[in-house]
Image 1 (tube, rainbow, N blue to C red):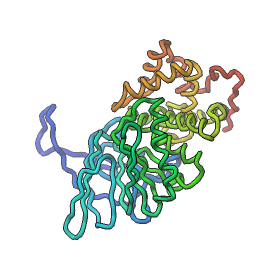
Image 2: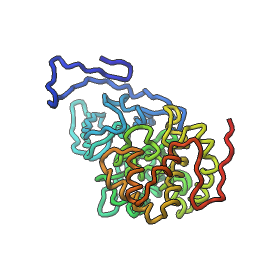
Image 3: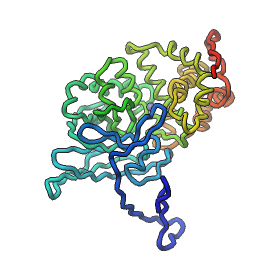
Image 4: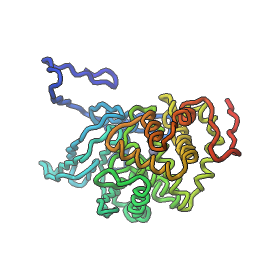
Length: 377
Ligand SMILES: [Zn+2]
């Protein structure tokens, strides 16, 4: 029985406790459907392209694609079977297992997610694509999926992925999935998304200036360590996913022609009380302020403050330990505080609690001259 967004399945016979069981759900999706949020997400669900669709399910749009429990801490291996007319392609997360001719000139493709995947990170794209294969560090398969008419124009920035992988591996350890690639979205949607092993990036991000393109590409790639591999326990932990992605995006940009990290963080510091007032503290979002700036630059600032407090060497150990300890698992704010305290050999709970939950922005270690702007209602 369907009750709003919930599907209630009542078994015909009782299921013994602990016994595995299979549920078949017949489901018809409408790929013209979208939902909307008034934050960085904008329109989500099925996102139309000129000849098909891409999927941006985050945060709770996966149920518009297939029946699923879309809590961000839950994940499962997914097999996709997609049948299309012969002149239309289809691609999903993970590995292409088979391509089979079907009656009526149609083609069925089967994709295997290879590793368990959270519903919000599912990708299923339909359209006329070209698959562009290359190789990343240690032979990692890199597979870009690009609309035919955008292959050449997006090639320059797409070709930077192996460099981005190498740069992030230096800081966060080995890339945690078996392949990576960029799905170029021929869409008006201005938002990229870290759909697992195949980030969807809108074409405009790849047709503008290099600094902006690299920020977006590094951001989505960083999520594969923090957000995809280390999943969040609950949506209130989103700062862990977006804060890390924004931190490394800005750290990369600092040494690749962009704004310096210090300048960006000083700017964020000045506005931090206002963001606290408008969006809630970094780990205190409300449903309608979840993807606001506090979860991005506001949360990168918490990681910057931590680095200033414990020093770069200890911070780098915390980061590597975080993504290796919780690789393939979900973890929350308290887990991060505990792990950081263990690695730094000091109790960071008072420090991080004030930054993450407190009503006012604490002083920035090492920058006694930094000031927070007064809050305006
Ligand atoms: Zn992000």
